[in-house]
Length: 613
DNA sequence: GCATGCGCACGCT
DNA sequence: AGCGTGCGCATGC
View 1 (cartoon, helix red, strand yellow):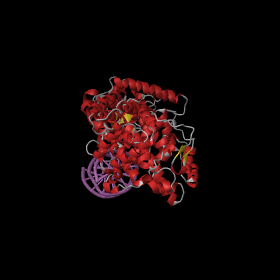
View 2 (cartoon, rainbow, N blue to C red):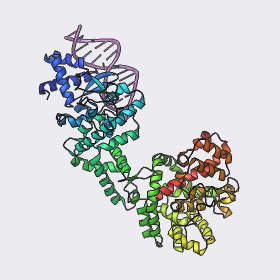
View 3 (cartoon, rainbow, N blue to C red):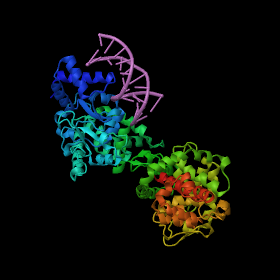
View 4 (cartoon, chains in turn red, cyan, purple):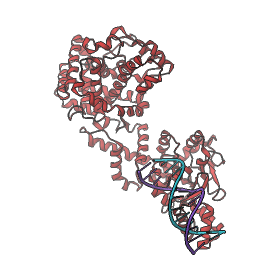
């Protein structure tokens, strides 16, 4: 234990140096302490080392030089950093240093920019690899960064004095990440951290060693992974919070946002463990919980609980609620059933692109609004497509598209308006009801629906309610203009895509060939089963995508897609420019491809996902 | 010579 | 834009 007197002197000195914008390095500290208090530099050095071990002082390597920080101050100042830092795996140092738990002064976790840059705080008491705060992952990360040394420098007080910097990336051997033990070490660290999480150590302290890691270069996802470790208990709280909020919002409010959750947690964080909940930290934990499946994130980035889609605002729960409210809700049960099944499937399939897609959606968010304008509604298929495809989307994005009942609308509409699924008058009436709420565009959809419905045989109609209108997977799907969907494109999730089909065929119509179909639109009275609606694009392989565009009448461009190795996921992530310029295809076809296929596929996919979220 | 103050640049959020 | 850090220079003792 350091001598209180020295601690005071040293901290004071560090503060002083900092205040005069001088680097609080060993030399300056010793000199100032000696000058002010007459202390022997060696003694000062020793005391400083003790303070570092106690995490009262943080040793950082900033821009290639060692610097010291008043841990308490650092933490207070850089809460944000802490949050980020907190995401990283905990430092083993916490474990071995019983003394480290010097809970009083140490809130070492915080990191200031310098700390971040310094890459590593030193709280590592044990220079041995196993105790090194760095996880193998982090090390790898740094190695990848290619500028590891400076930032990777972690001070290891225990080694040879304060000035000894240890590089966790293995450069100094103290923390050889590349060693076979690295992974194991990390696990152990994790465990210990977890242990700490529920033990006496305050969260900030637990995070100390790691926080420094907070390197600007670190990839968010890695951070998330690392952070996952820390927040065990927080995770529980988080999940509980989401559930609670979901319950609260089950009446049709917007899906949960990070802000909301944060706010909720904030009200409870105080009694939890006293730690400060930061947006970033919660986010990280959130990610973790989502990974674990305890929470779920919608495509738009909202948080909800697994069983309740979107906190009931737009998801299945909502759908069922909506159905219950509808006069004709005979089909609500099947809907729900289908939705719940689909959720799992789609969720997994699409999780990967969720974030990016959400981002995209955000970008396009305003569009639906404008297109909902009556004047934008044209009899042409394309216009129609936009309107309808967007409707659910906008609702999902919390846009009030259809009066105040948007929440229900997306799902309902998708269900009711689909020609293929529409089976009973009740649905039709529901659709009309929706039409009344939403306006012209819906009416049009209903019209199309009616037309299509009539074309169905009674048997077909009856079969539809079960949500399992089947298509023979082996049979090429015939789309308008004789375009067929390659058998290679599986239809496994057809049930999931039924809504899409409905939307696509009734509302979209873009599919098929760029020729007649696109001109004809809905007026042709031909309801095409768009390829996009038959399967989940997420599942498409590069070949599937190519086949799709070939079938759609863009054989040349299909080749470009193939050349660029665009698979379903990539396709759903493509942006306008990607299509127009990234594929090196002619502008004309590119525009058509984007507007009539890519965009539609994306929207359909998103909307479908949202509806089932 | 040393301590201190601070303008300014840099990097990060 | 705001913030933390610290180099480098000016100033004072």
